[in-house]
Image 1: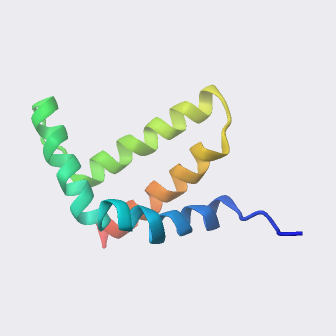
Image 2 (image 1 turned 135 degrees about the vertical axis):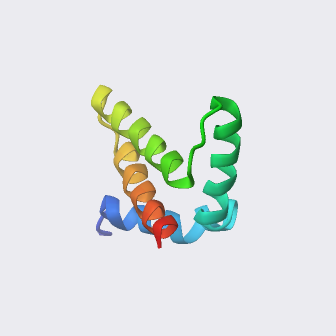
Length: 86
């Protein structure tokens, strides 16, 4: 019987695998997101700001109803934030 992966393991697999293949490196991806968000809001937003907003979305959703996906994505965004910061 296969042991279910933890949310941290699942997030790490997504961030290191499919996510990066589909969307490129976090720094470039979130830089583009920040450019678009800045135009839309009229306020200068950094890639880090955008990552934190996505984390807030997941926390908001989790406060409404628990879903494993919320926690996996939250961990993934925290990991991406660390990559952007480094």
